[in-house]
Amino acid sequence: MYPLWLMLALLCGLPALAQAPESDAEPGRVCNPLPLNRPAPRTEAERREQERWAQYRQKLQDYLQRLPKEPDARLLMPVQGVRVRQVADTFGAPRDGWRVHEGQDIFAPRGTPVYSATHGFVWRIGHGQRGGLYVFVVGPGGRRYYYAHLDRYAPGLKEGQRVTPQTLLGYVGNTGNARTTPPHLHFGVYSGSRRTCDYRVINPLPLLVDRDWKALVNPARNR
Image 1 (cartoon, rainbow, N blue to C red):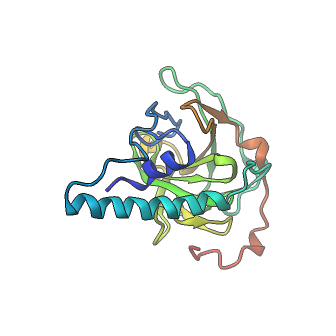
Image 2 (cartoon, rainbow, N blue to C red):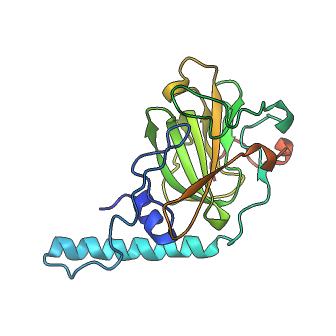
C-alpha cells in the first residue's frame, strides 16, 4: 500500500518528498516515483491493491477539485492567543551549516493549540530529525503549509483529512532540533510548480493576519 503523502504528490503534481521537510524544509527531488497507469495485476493481492489505489485516487481527486486554484492571499495566525506583531521576523536568518531559516518561529507556552491557517487537507503527519513532530497541509493553489516542532498531534488527526481554519492540528512544543530552545511553532510555506520538482520558499509573516480567537467555535475540538 502506498503512503497517502506519495499518492497526493502524484495526483496534484506536487513534488513527492523523499523525507519530511525538516524544520527548514529540505524537499527531495523525487519526481513521479510511481506510474499512475500500472500494469495489469497478476495475483489476487495485486488486484485488491490496485482497487484500493483506484479508490484512493478518486478520493484524492475529489479533494483537489474542491480546492481553489489560487493560493490564499492571507493566512490566519495558527497559534492560539498570539498576535502577528509578536512574531519576530527571522525568515532567511542563518542556521547551522549552510542552512537558512525557511519559515517563522511563533513562540508560545508548551501545549498551546495550533490550528490550520487555511482550508485544505492533511498531506503528511510524521517525525523528522530537525522538525520533530510535524503536520503538512496542502491548501488552495497547491501551496504547502508546514507545522513543525509540535509537542503532540491533535487527537484523531489523519492524513487525507480535510481541514478548515477551525481544525486543531496539534500543540506547540520543541521536538526535533528545537529541544534546546523554548517551545514554538515553526511555520513554513512552500509553493511549487505542478509539473516540475522545483519549489519556492515563501515568507509567511507578510501573509499572516490576526485571528479573533474568541470567535473560534469549540477551540479544543478537532474538526
